[in-house]
Length: 221
Image 1 (cartoon, one colour):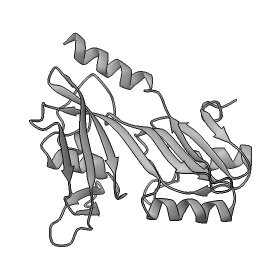
Image 2 (cartoon, rainbow, N blue to C red):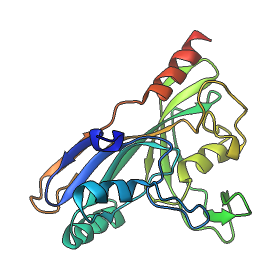
Image 3 (cartoon, rainbow, N blue to C red):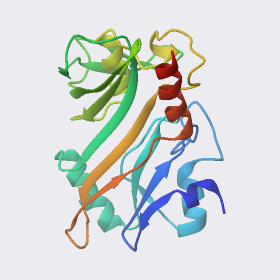
């Protein structure tokens, strides 16, 4: 059994909720043709699935897929109306002076050959990320981040724009580190209403080993 199938948190006729491992694309990117991606792996096991939202290839954590067009429509409406609540945990460089911060930098995606997202006050799209300090570590901080909009690399760029790039995120000017080999970002929890039963559900994914190891390495100094 492949690792992704072992990471299923919940499934029924309408939805699949899983803990996505870092390093696996949800779909092949337009400039990065991959035959090995999450949607295909799920469809080989479960049949057709519909994409409700995405996580970056390098991001781990909770994701939901729909198993019918009706469930897809219902979940999309929840995400568009901000009725689904997505909470991320991240390790960021430095020690911010604030305990809570709302970042509202407008963002423009797919800039340059590295396909970066950039703050663009004139042409960027409105964005909002709510940050909260969970734990202050040596030269780093464990943050909670809640997305109120869903732009590509939004948390990563908003953290960078606040002068606290995510640990390991060299694309957005974080210093080189041996603590983690990717941006230290984890989709910690997802709450939503089940599209068939109308039950409010919440799923949480534990930190993966590399994220835990980075925290331990920081604490050891």
